[in-house]
Amino acid sequence: MATSGVETLSPTKQFLLTYLMPEKCYDRFFVDINFMHVPCLKIVLSKFAGVWILLGVVLAQIPQVWTVWKAGNAEGLSLTSLLLQLYVLTEPVVYCMANNFPVSAWSERVFTLLQTLSLVFLLLRYRGDTAKGLLVVVAYCGAVLLLASSLTPPSILSGMQSSVIGAVVASKAVQVWTNYCSGTTGQLSGLAVCLGFTGSLSLIFTSLQETGQSLSTLSHALASCLCCLLLAQIWYYRYRTFSVKEKEE
Image (cartoon, rainbow, N blue to C red; front, side, top):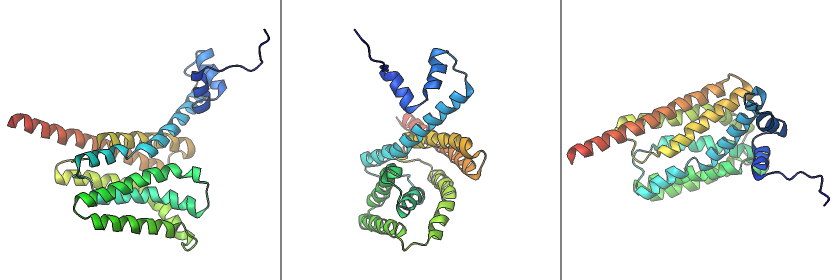
């Protein structure tokens, strides 16, 4: 029986070649059994970091939204921190919209942006300010449309772009300070913080590969450190609460 000249790839190989490595690196790893080939390792790590960043962007706030919704309160969450996160997510979206980038270039950020906007609304709603929450949502949508329109001077978008780095760090720092002052992390989701931490690590790697040591790399490093501090606070305050409950019983 004649065979076609087209090689049939296994599902595993097809997945690896599509998402993580070129064929030459596949041959290095799985044909030559050389897993220490530095150029190919860099390629795989860069691809993996890119996939993880995308997953982090899409999934980052889902655990936090679920935690707040399930508990029926947003205790421990900082409104200032959430608004700073919303600002960080808004900048690339309005920039892409203003410059007529294809929707595929920024659609995943809209998903995370909507999650964060939902958290802002839920926080205000559970504080008894539902009307204020609705007003914030409407005002925010209006501001996005205005910023993405031709009425907004390019200098404003440039200013937003340059201030995002500080806003990333500030959003984490504000939440850390809120936890410290209140002595609890409340409904802060450990899984959401973990996703933020691993996302920051991935951004550090890609930033080093693309630009070397830069202000952007430093900001991602600071964000990672603050995420570690948030995780430590979650463990400490919840462990302390659990210990107190055990003693009372």
